[in-house]
Length: 441
Image (tube, helix red, strand yellow):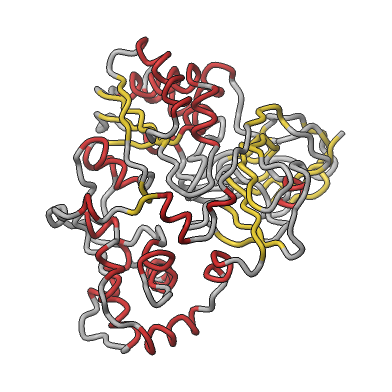
């Protein structure tokens, strides 16, 4: 299969990164890439679905990974897994011998091992330039579920209509379940027996980079976890802090110890990410050196500076994110720079996930969440027209239309848009510029 053919299939079936921002997968295919990496580091505490899926679907994932490598002409395919994922490692080792240029790499049990820039360095020794893209150094990274979706598209001609979601925390039966796109958080949580706390908060994604959402939040192609925590839990309190108060607290109590910068994973790889300089300039309203504020563009928002490094409990990450968003909204783009040398002490400044979980008071929630791949049923879905980076899709159905699972209901719009397919069999109840509501048959 040639790269153009694979790109067309992946675009036609609506495949994007199954986590994070959801970068359209076809846009990562390039003949400039000589190395592809399968990301199974899954570094956020409590997240489990990638290791589970690779364990149970090793044949399918490795087959699709090899198809990607062959199509784009990659000379090397590297699967990155943590040593503690023993069953996943065994499953990969049982299949990997069938592929010539594919290898297994064990990464450290640290956070954020799954960050793209960190992962590439650990797997290849290459450093992505600040402001640059992995393709600039000949690398492309894909997560496990994304590659599995490529298999489903290429081999079984199935578009993305469902999502695996780990549901953990204050729930009766922690599980990883497959649900139709467009279900609500509340409905998915009910599938695992419901909540076990009186006043729940719903964290979508990991405790470090996830966001607090309502129970009516919709499942999309990038939803990978629902973590239910009490509203007064440390993680929730930190997530819901107000920037105006964070800034005042920083002005009053930041001691400029530089610990936030010392533990910054991008800084350790030579990127101009210096949270301590930003905190000093922002709290003192010192704009003599505007580059300090422009350098916020190089932050990966991993949250270590806020949730772990700062002894004062301040929030550099959230404040930096605000500045970064403001710059983007005003059309400012990061310059591509040459990285500084990797810090020699980097190996001693990485944060073990086990220690991070204890700091976040999450250890007792780290229990098995078995994977159930059978698709759960939904009575109604609200399928969003924008589920990833890029422009929203454009509806091609009308109220009253009958649709079946996998049917195209919205075509690609402009830019990096992807089509959207029906996630259940049913009747279209509502169409607007945000979602298409379908009632089950």
